[in-house]
Image (tube, rainbow, N blue to C red; front, top):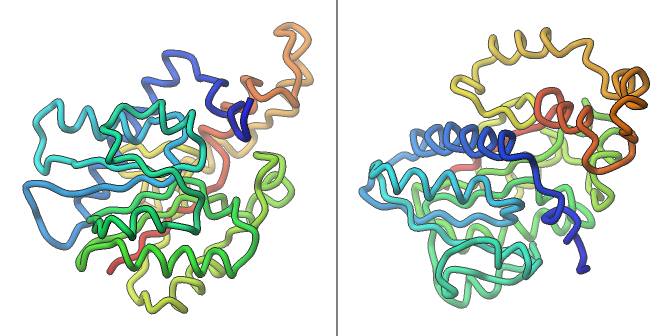
Length: 259
């Protein structure tokens, strides 16, 4: 197996996969509404597509003949992950962020650059800064870049427990600071409950209400009580109680930068 192949091979159940696509459709609609100009077609680049839920949301958007039409491109360092995305070869770029050379050399410009849970894997703030500088070369005027990342201030040690490849502890302050240093002045920061991008997920009142509902959820406690019955180990990647934590309670950030 190659580096990070375990992530792709560890698939969600059909129900959870359908739910994740639906949530990403809600997220996509939200991002389209945030674009400053309305177009019949927009170009979207996803960096780090993971299991492909955002990609499938884009496919469903076009299948339903919604406007704007989405012209989807993708970049990842893992060939197996790229092979899982069913788009034309010329729309796939194999590279590791912050290096965007294959895209810059093609002189491609995008309306939305979607970066889901990537910057926390970078070595340090210098790489994050260079990544943002490189994105400036591939984004349309009036476009935006969207960064999803863990809120390490809220997560504490859970930030490293989530993923063995996490390195750079992302916070509201240090990510926005790096964006400011690259000349980006307009930025929105949204607290996100786990991976639940339901309608109104960006509403502060709904966010607080959701936090109240999941306040006492503990994957460790549930695994201690029920793990023996399910033959479930807390440290296994497919642990159902931890997956519920990631979906519902994990404290993440959505940072939107406007060009």
